[in-house]
Length: 181
Image (cartoon, rainbow, N blue to C red; front, side, top):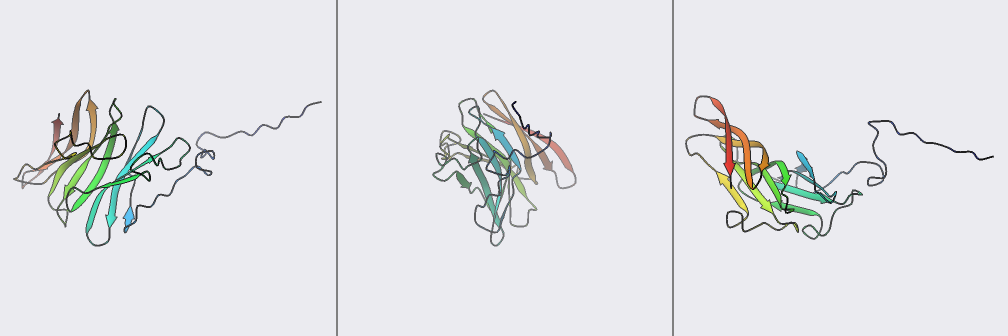
């Protein structure tokens, strides 16, 4: 006689084989960190982006890459984490993976009180270093000069980056779409 025990996992339960309990709490140092978007590479590695809030009044783009088991991928920037400074208040709000494995980050960079923002993009090589073939230093900002404009989300359209966001003309906010090479 054989006896089998079957453990059923319900839909919506955490996957406990992922980092042991199904969840990751990640520190970048500084005052606080948020995860705003996630992308999964073709090899199953997981890329998470958000702002790293520094002590005082500034923030940077924060990026972490995890192996499929949830451990930090140390082939990415040496420890699995990367921070990109663009301006005073940087917020990485979206991420996408290009077909060549390069990582595109989108969001905004703002002045100290967040009253004026600009669209901000960065592109990283697969090892986590800034891709200097993208705008010469791996970073792009777009300022229309007459008001507040920012980016909230984007998608890749072949080799182009299409960003959605807003533009404030001094009186009202308007939806905006930006397209980059």
